[in-house]
Length: 194
Image (tube, rainbow, N blue to C red):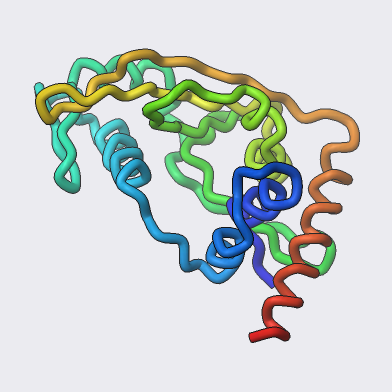
């Protein structure tokens, strides 16, 4: 069974918070998640960051327009000279755990997030995403690079930018193993129910 970091985090959120409903976690396990407008904006923003769009005053991707100067500011904080969107997989608890990082540079991993609302630091610190990526990519630190976007006259501007930094800790792989086991049992139960 293949389990992505995203699926593991979806299941963790379902089990530990009221943030995810049963139908949403089932959709996540079956790769049937509906892409929201916010997700589309975030993907377009990341595409602009990755392709040197700061040379344009107002770069556009997938129907969304951004401020080129703000793209350039974000680019200065992330390691574009490293590996962009590398994929890796490892075996754990009889499953193949897969991950696709946004940026890897040396022993650091970066994940670019675009959001429209204040972040919940606890949600990020509890997340399995950064833990799984540190394990998969053998990283010593993980950065959430968070761009707070605000639209104005059809253009998205970076209103605020923040970084959250996390590091591996003793017992982290045991925690990941436990969630891999629980998630795989959940997926197997879904498969038997059809």
